[in-house]
Image 1 (cartoon, one colour):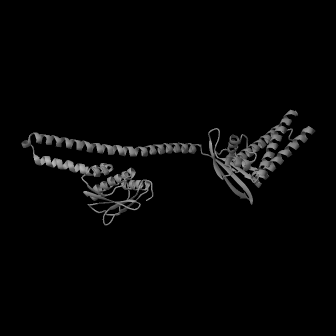
Image 2 (tube, helix red, strand yellow):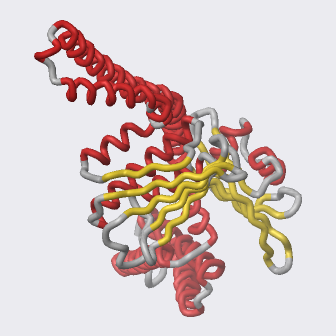
Length: 405
Protein backbone atom coordinates (compact mmCIF):
# COMPACT_ATOMS: atom_id res chain seq x y z
CA UNK A 1 0.00 0.00 0.00
CA UNK A 2 1.27 3.46 -0.79
CA UNK A 3 2.48 5.58 2.23
CA UNK A 4 0.63 8.73 1.03
CA UNK A 5 -2.92 7.48 1.59
CA UNK A 6 -2.26 6.08 5.09
CA UNK A 7 -0.52 9.35 6.05
CA UNK A 8 -3.58 11.36 4.94
CA UNK A 9 -5.89 9.07 6.94
CA UNK A 10 -3.67 9.37 10.03
CA UNK A 11 -3.55 13.21 9.69
CA UNK A 12 -7.36 13.27 9.37
CA UNK A 13 -7.66 11.20 12.51
CA UNK A 14 -5.22 13.52 14.35
CA UNK A 15 -7.45 16.50 13.52
CA UNK A 16 -10.44 14.64 14.97
CA UNK A 17 -8.37 13.88 18.05
CA UNK A 18 -7.52 17.59 18.45
CA UNK A 19 -11.21 18.52 18.20
CA UNK A 20 -12.12 15.92 20.85
CA UNK A 21 -9.39 17.30 23.13
CA UNK A 22 -10.73 20.87 22.78
CA UNK A 23 -14.24 19.65 23.54
CA UNK A 24 -12.89 17.89 26.64
CA UNK A 25 -11.29 21.11 27.84
CA UNK A 26 -14.58 23.00 27.27
CA UNK A 27 -16.52 20.48 29.30
CA UNK A 28 -13.93 20.48 32.09
CA UNK A 29 -13.81 24.26 32.58
CA UNK A 30 -17.25 25.30 31.32
CA UNK A 31 -20.28 23.15 32.12
CA UNK A 32 -18.54 20.54 34.33
CA UNK A 33 -21.01 17.77 33.43
CA UNK A 34 -19.47 14.34 34.23
CA UNK A 35 -21.23 12.48 31.42
CA UNK A 36 -20.01 14.88 28.75
CA UNK A 37 -16.49 14.88 30.20
CA UNK A 38 -16.36 11.07 30.19
CA UNK A 39 -17.63 10.87 26.59
CA UNK A 40 -15.16 13.47 25.35
CA UNK A 41 -12.29 11.70 27.18
CA UNK A 42 -13.26 8.35 25.67
CA UNK A 43 -13.46 9.83 22.18
CA UNK A 44 -10.09 11.54 22.59
CA UNK A 45 -8.45 8.40 23.96
CA UNK A 46 -9.96 6.19 21.24
CA UNK A 47 -8.74 8.50 18.51
CA UNK A 48 -5.22 8.61 20.05
CA UNK A 49 -5.08 4.82 20.32
CA UNK A 50 -6.13 4.42 16.70
CA UNK A 51 -3.57 6.97 15.55
CA UNK A 52 -0.81 5.24 17.48
CA UNK A 53 -1.82 1.83 16.05
CA UNK A 54 -1.83 3.14 12.50
CA UNK A 55 1.55 4.81 12.91
CA UNK A 56 3.07 1.60 14.27
CA UNK A 57 1.72 -0.41 11.36
CA UNK A 58 2.91 2.27 8.93
CA UNK A 59 6.46 1.99 10.30
CA UNK A 60 6.41 -1.82 10.00
CA UNK A 61 4.79 -1.55 6.56
CA UNK A 62 2.31 -4.23 7.43
CA UNK A 63 -0.77 -4.64 9.55
CA UNK A 64 -4.43 -5.46 9.41
CA UNK A 65 -5.67 -1.85 9.25
CA UNK A 66 -3.19 -0.68 6.65
CA UNK A 67 -4.25 -3.53 4.46
CA UNK A 68 -7.88 -2.31 4.66
CA UNK A 69 -7.90 1.42 3.78
CA UNK A 70 -11.69 1.36 3.42
CA UNK A 71 -12.06 0.40 7.08
CA UNK A 72 -9.68 3.19 8.14
CA UNK A 73 -11.65 5.67 6.04
CA UNK A 74 -14.88 4.48 7.66
CA UNK A 75 -13.34 4.97 11.14
CA UNK A 76 -12.19 8.47 10.18
CA UNK A 77 -15.67 9.35 9.00
CA UNK A 78 -17.17 8.00 12.22
CA UNK A 79 -14.82 10.08 14.39
CA UNK A 80 -15.48 13.14 12.19
CA UNK A 81 -19.24 12.81 12.59
CA UNK A 82 -18.81 12.36 16.35
CA UNK A 83 -16.62 15.50 16.52
CA UNK A 84 -19.15 17.48 14.49
CA UNK A 85 -21.98 16.31 16.76
CA UNK A 86 -19.98 17.36 19.83
CA UNK A 87 -19.26 20.78 18.34
CA UNK A 88 -22.94 21.32 17.50
CA UNK A 89 -23.92 20.22 21.00
CA UNK A 90 -21.41 22.63 22.56
CA UNK A 91 -22.66 25.49 20.39
CA UNK A 92 -26.28 24.88 21.37
CA UNK A 93 -25.35 24.53 25.02
CA UNK A 94 -23.39 27.77 24.80
CA UNK A 95 -26.50 29.62 23.69
CA UNK A 96 -28.49 28.20 26.60
CA UNK A 97 -25.84 28.47 29.29
CA UNK A 98 -25.06 31.68 31.21
CA UNK A 99 -21.32 32.31 31.49
CA UNK A 100 -19.09 35.24 32.33
CA UNK A 101 -18.43 35.77 28.64
CA UNK A 102 -22.13 35.76 27.78
CA UNK A 103 -22.83 38.21 30.61
CA UNK A 104 -20.13 40.54 29.29
CA UNK A 105 -21.46 40.28 25.73
CA UNK A 106 -24.99 40.99 26.96
CA UNK A 107 -23.89 44.04 28.95
CA UNK A 108 -21.92 45.36 25.97
CA UNK A 109 -25.14 45.49 23.94
CA UNK A 110 -27.02 47.57 26.54
CA UNK A 111 -27.58 51.29 25.84
CA UNK A 112 -26.83 52.00 29.52
CA UNK A 113 -23.25 52.63 30.59
CA UNK A 114 -22.22 50.20 33.36
CA UNK A 115 -19.07 50.09 35.46
CA UNK A 116 -18.37 47.96 38.54
CA UNK A 117 -15.17 48.65 40.44
CA UNK A 118 -13.54 48.00 43.80
CA UNK A 119 -12.31 50.55 46.30
CA UNK A 120 -9.33 52.34 44.80
CA UNK A 121 -10.70 52.38 41.25
CA UNK A 122 -9.77 48.84 40.09
CA UNK A 123 -12.39 47.78 37.53
CA UNK A 124 -14.30 44.54 37.81
CA UNK A 125 -16.60 45.01 34.79
CA UNK A 126 -17.05 47.89 32.34
CA UNK A 127 -19.23 47.62 29.23
CA UNK A 128 -18.54 49.21 25.86
CA UNK A 129 -21.13 51.96 26.33
CA UNK A 130 -19.47 53.24 29.51
CA UNK A 131 -16.06 53.07 27.86
CA UNK A 132 -17.39 55.11 24.92
CA UNK A 133 -18.88 57.69 27.30
CA UNK A 134 -15.57 57.93 29.15
CA UNK A 135 -13.72 58.58 25.91
CA UNK A 136 -16.13 61.39 25.00
CA UNK A 137 -15.92 62.88 28.50
CA UNK A 138 -12.23 62.54 29.33
CA UNK A 139 -10.60 61.72 26.00
CA UNK A 140 -9.48 58.23 27.04
CA UNK A 141 -10.86 54.98 28.37
CA UNK A 142 -11.44 54.25 32.06
CA UNK A 143 -8.10 53.60 33.72
CA UNK A 144 -9.06 54.61 37.25
CA UNK A 145 -12.79 54.19 37.83
CA UNK A 146 -12.70 56.27 41.03
CA UNK A 147 -11.17 59.24 39.20
CA UNK A 148 -13.68 58.88 36.37
CA UNK A 149 -16.55 58.91 38.86
CA UNK A 150 -15.22 62.13 40.43
CA UNK A 151 -14.98 63.70 36.97
CA UNK A 152 -18.52 62.65 36.04
CA UNK A 153 -20.34 63.26 39.33
CA UNK A 154 -18.19 65.98 40.93
CA UNK A 155 -18.49 64.28 44.31
CA UNK A 156 -22.27 63.79 44.14
CA UNK A 157 -24.24 60.56 44.05
CA UNK A 158 -26.08 61.59 40.88
CA UNK A 159 -25.62 64.25 38.21
CA UNK A 160 -26.41 65.07 34.58
CA UNK A 161 -23.51 65.53 32.14
CA UNK A 162 -23.68 67.02 28.64
CA UNK A 163 -21.11 65.62 26.23
CA UNK A 164 -19.51 67.48 23.34
CA UNK A 165 -21.41 65.38 20.78
CA UNK A 166 -24.72 66.65 22.17
CA UNK A 167 -25.63 63.52 24.13
CA UNK A 168 -26.78 63.95 27.73
CA UNK A 169 -26.24 61.26 30.36
CA UNK A 170 -27.50 60.93 33.90
CA UNK A 171 -24.88 59.33 36.16
CA UNK A 172 -25.93 57.41 39.28
CA UNK A 173 -23.57 55.85 41.84
CA UNK A 174 -24.42 53.04 44.27
CA UNK A 175 -22.27 51.13 46.73
CA UNK A 176 -22.76 47.47 47.63
CA UNK A 177 -20.69 44.56 48.90
CA UNK A 178 -19.62 41.14 47.59
CA UNK A 179 -18.49 38.66 50.23
CA UNK A 180 -18.04 41.55 52.63
CA UNK A 181 -15.83 43.54 50.23
CA UNK A 182 -17.24 46.92 49.07
CA UNK A 183 -17.96 47.25 45.38
CA UNK A 184 -19.15 50.34 43.52
CA UNK A 185 -21.73 50.52 40.73
CA UNK A 186 -21.66 53.47 38.34
CA UNK A 187 -24.49 53.73 35.79
CA UNK A 188 -24.96 56.22 32.93
CA UNK A 189 -28.46 56.61 31.41
CA UNK A 190 -29.07 58.36 28.09
CA UNK A 191 -31.50 61.21 28.87
CA UNK A 192 -30.85 63.30 25.77
CA UNK A 193 -34.50 63.39 24.66
CA UNK A 194 -35.80 64.07 28.17
CA UNK A 195 -33.23 66.87 28.61
CA UNK A 196 -34.25 68.44 25.30
CA UNK A 197 -37.94 68.30 26.23
CA UNK A 198 -37.15 69.83 29.63
CA UNK A 199 -35.29 72.71 27.99
CA UNK A 200 -38.20 73.29 25.60
CA UNK A 201 -40.63 73.26 28.53
CA UNK A 202 -38.50 75.77 30.43
CA UNK A 203 -38.37 78.04 27.37
CA UNK A 204 -42.15 77.85 27.01
CA UNK A 205 -42.61 78.55 30.71
CA UNK A 206 -40.33 81.58 30.42
CA UNK A 207 -42.31 82.86 27.44
CA UNK A 208 -45.54 82.29 29.33
CA UNK A 209 -44.13 84.13 32.35
CA UNK A 210 -43.14 87.12 30.22
CA UNK A 211 -46.53 87.10 28.48
CA UNK A 212 -48.28 86.93 31.84
CA UNK A 213 -46.17 89.83 33.10
CA UNK A 214 -47.12 91.87 30.03
CA UNK A 215 -50.80 91.07 30.51
CA UNK A 216 -50.58 92.07 34.16
CA UNK A 217 -48.89 95.31 33.12
CA UNK A 218 -51.61 95.97 30.56
CA UNK A 219 -54.47 95.14 32.95
CA UNK A 220 -54.45 98.53 34.72
CA UNK A 221 -54.34 100.32 31.37
CA UNK A 222 -57.29 98.26 30.12
CA UNK A 223 -59.21 99.05 33.29
CA UNK A 224 -58.38 102.73 32.89
CA UNK A 225 -59.60 102.63 29.28
CA UNK A 226 -62.84 101.00 30.38
CA UNK A 227 -63.32 103.62 33.09
CA UNK A 228 -62.53 106.44 30.69
CA UNK A 229 -65.08 105.01 28.28
CA UNK A 230 -67.70 104.95 31.03
CA UNK A 231 -66.81 108.50 32.04
CA UNK A 232 -67.06 109.60 28.43
CA UNK A 233 -70.52 108.05 28.15
CA UNK A 234 -71.57 109.93 31.29
CA UNK A 235 -70.20 113.20 29.96
CA UNK A 236 -72.01 112.69 26.66
CA UNK A 237 -75.21 111.96 28.56
CA UNK A 238 -74.78 115.08 30.70
CA UNK A 239 -73.93 117.16 27.65
CA UNK A 240 -76.99 115.96 25.76
CA UNK A 241 -79.23 116.42 28.79
CA UNK A 242 -78.00 119.98 29.39
CA UNK A 243 -78.30 120.74 25.71
CA UNK A 244 -81.93 119.66 25.65
CA UNK A 245 -82.60 121.57 28.87
CA UNK A 246 -81.05 124.78 27.54
CA UNK A 247 -82.98 124.52 24.29
CA UNK A 248 -86.24 124.07 26.18
CA UNK A 249 -85.35 126.98 28.48
CA UNK A 250 -84.60 129.21 25.51
CA UNK A 251 -87.84 128.20 23.87
CA UNK A 252 -89.72 128.92 27.11
CA UNK A 253 -88.19 132.38 27.35
CA UNK A 254 -89.01 133.22 23.75
CA UNK A 255 -92.53 131.75 23.83
CA UNK A 256 -93.68 131.35 27.44
CA UNK A 257 -97.14 130.19 26.57
CA UNK A 258 -96.04 127.34 24.31
CA UNK A 259 -93.77 125.47 26.80
CA UNK A 260 -94.57 122.85 29.43
CA UNK A 261 -93.25 124.48 32.57
CA UNK A 262 -93.57 121.36 34.71
CA UNK A 263 -91.49 119.29 32.26
CA UNK A 264 -88.84 122.00 32.12
CA UNK A 265 -88.65 122.20 35.92
CA UNK A 266 -88.38 118.40 36.15
CA UNK A 267 -85.47 118.43 33.67
CA UNK A 268 -83.73 121.15 35.69
CA UNK A 269 -84.12 119.10 38.87
CA UNK A 270 -82.68 115.96 37.21
CA UNK A 271 -79.64 117.79 35.90
CA UNK A 272 -79.03 119.54 39.23
CA UNK A 273 -79.29 116.17 40.99
CA UNK A 274 -76.85 114.67 38.47
CA UNK A 275 -74.34 117.45 39.21
CA UNK A 276 -74.70 116.92 42.95
CA UNK A 277 -74.07 113.18 42.64
CA UNK A 278 -71.02 113.61 40.40
CA UNK A 279 -68.55 112.78 43.22
CA UNK A 280 -70.40 109.61 44.13
CA UNK A 281 -70.55 108.47 40.50
CA UNK A 282 -66.87 109.14 40.11
CA UNK A 283 -66.14 106.92 43.11
CA UNK A 284 -68.11 104.09 41.53
CA UNK A 285 -66.50 104.38 38.11
CA UNK A 286 -64.43 101.15 38.37
CA UNK A 287 -67.58 99.14 39.03
CA UNK A 288 -69.65 100.51 36.18
CA UNK A 289 -68.96 97.45 33.98
CA UNK A 290 -70.16 94.90 36.52
CA UNK A 291 -73.10 97.06 37.62
CA UNK A 292 -74.20 97.60 34.03
CA UNK A 293 -74.03 93.85 33.38
CA UNK A 294 -76.11 93.21 36.47
CA UNK A 295 -78.69 95.77 35.32
CA UNK A 296 -78.83 94.18 31.86
CA UNK A 297 -79.47 90.79 33.51
CA UNK A 298 -82.30 92.17 35.58
CA UNK A 299 -80.45 92.02 38.92
CA UNK A 300 -80.71 95.06 41.16
CA UNK A 301 -77.43 95.69 42.99
CA UNK A 302 -77.28 97.59 46.28
CA UNK A 303 -73.85 98.95 47.15
CA UNK A 304 -73.10 100.62 50.47
CA UNK A 305 -70.04 101.61 52.46
CA UNK A 306 -66.56 102.78 51.57
CA UNK A 307 -64.81 100.96 48.73
CA UNK A 308 -61.00 100.50 48.42
CA UNK A 309 -59.15 103.19 46.54
CA UNK A 310 -56.45 100.91 45.08
CA UNK A 311 -57.14 100.06 41.42
CA UNK A 312 -56.11 96.41 41.74
CA UNK A 313 -58.34 95.96 44.78
CA UNK A 314 -61.22 97.56 42.88
CA UNK A 315 -60.68 95.10 40.01
CA UNK A 316 -61.11 92.25 42.51
CA UNK A 317 -64.29 93.85 43.85
CA UNK A 318 -65.55 94.25 40.30
CA UNK A 319 -64.86 90.55 39.62
CA UNK A 320 -66.58 89.60 42.89
CA UNK A 321 -69.70 91.55 41.90
CA UNK A 322 -69.78 89.82 38.50
CA UNK A 323 -69.39 86.35 40.07
CA UNK A 324 -71.99 87.10 42.74
CA UNK A 325 -74.56 88.46 40.28
CA UNK A 326 -74.06 85.44 37.99
CA UNK A 327 -74.58 83.00 40.86
CA UNK A 328 -77.66 84.90 42.07
CA UNK A 329 -79.20 84.64 38.62
CA UNK A 330 -78.15 81.05 37.92
CA UNK A 331 -78.51 79.28 41.28
CA UNK A 332 -80.63 81.43 43.60
CA UNK A 333 -83.07 82.67 40.93
CA UNK A 334 -82.92 86.01 42.74
CA UNK A 335 -83.53 89.55 41.61
CA UNK A 336 -81.37 91.56 44.00
CA UNK A 337 -77.84 91.48 45.38
CA UNK A 338 -76.33 93.57 48.17
CA UNK A 339 -72.69 94.47 48.78
CA UNK A 340 -71.85 96.01 52.14
CA UNK A 341 -68.31 97.38 52.53
CA UNK A 342 -66.80 98.55 55.80
CA UNK A 343 -63.40 99.90 56.76
CA UNK A 344 -61.37 97.78 59.22
CA UNK A 345 -58.05 98.27 60.98
CA UNK A 346 -56.19 96.26 58.37
CA UNK A 347 -58.18 97.12 55.25
CA UNK A 348 -61.75 96.41 54.08
CA UNK A 349 -64.44 93.81 54.73
CA UNK A 350 -67.02 93.25 51.98
CA UNK A 351 -70.15 91.11 52.51
CA UNK A 352 -72.09 89.84 49.47
CA UNK A 353 -75.69 88.69 50.06
CA UNK A 354 -78.78 88.26 47.91
CA UNK A 355 -82.44 87.31 47.85
CA UNK A 356 -83.87 84.20 46.21
CA UNK A 357 -83.43 80.54 47.06
CA UNK A 358 -80.86 79.50 49.68
CA UNK A 359 -78.26 76.86 48.70
CA UNK A 360 -79.53 73.29 48.97
CA UNK A 361 -76.04 72.12 50.04
CA UNK A 362 -72.63 73.52 50.80
CA UNK A 363 -71.43 75.68 47.95
CA UNK A 364 -68.46 74.20 46.09
CA UNK A 365 -65.78 76.65 45.00
CA UNK A 366 -65.54 76.00 41.27
CA UNK A 367 -65.36 78.21 38.24
CA UNK A 368 -65.78 81.87 39.12
CA UNK A 369 -65.56 81.40 42.89
CA UNK A 370 -62.29 79.46 42.61
CA UNK A 371 -60.78 82.12 40.36
CA UNK A 372 -62.01 84.86 42.71
CA UNK A 373 -60.31 83.16 45.67
CA UNK A 374 -57.07 82.91 43.71
CA UNK A 375 -57.19 86.61 42.77
CA UNK A 376 -58.05 87.61 46.34
CA UNK A 377 -55.17 85.63 47.84
CA UNK A 378 -52.75 86.95 45.22
CA UNK A 379 -53.28 90.53 46.42
CA UNK A 380 -52.93 89.51 50.08
CA UNK A 381 -56.61 89.10 51.00
CA UNK A 382 -58.81 86.20 52.04
CA UNK A 383 -62.24 84.88 51.11
CA UNK A 384 -64.86 82.89 53.02
CA UNK A 385 -68.26 81.45 52.07
CA UNK A 386 -71.30 80.62 54.21
CA UNK A 387 -74.04 78.41 52.76
CA UNK A 388 -76.61 78.32 55.60
CA UNK A 389 -79.08 79.70 56.47
CA UNK A 390 -78.47 81.89 53.41
CA UNK A 391 -75.58 82.39 51.03
CA UNK A 392 -72.98 84.94 52.12
CA UNK A 393 -69.63 85.73 50.52
CA UNK A 394 -67.07 87.69 52.56
CA UNK A 395 -63.88 89.27 51.26
CA UNK A 396 -61.16 90.66 53.53
CA UNK A 397 -58.92 93.00 51.53
CA UNK A 398 -55.78 94.84 52.63
CA UNK A 399 -55.18 98.59 52.35
CA UNK A 400 -53.02 98.12 49.26
CA UNK A 401 -52.62 95.17 46.88
CA UNK A 402 -49.79 92.86 47.90
CA UNK A 403 -50.01 93.58 51.63
CA UNK A 404 -50.92 90.82 54.09
CA UNK A 405 -54.41 91.11 55.40
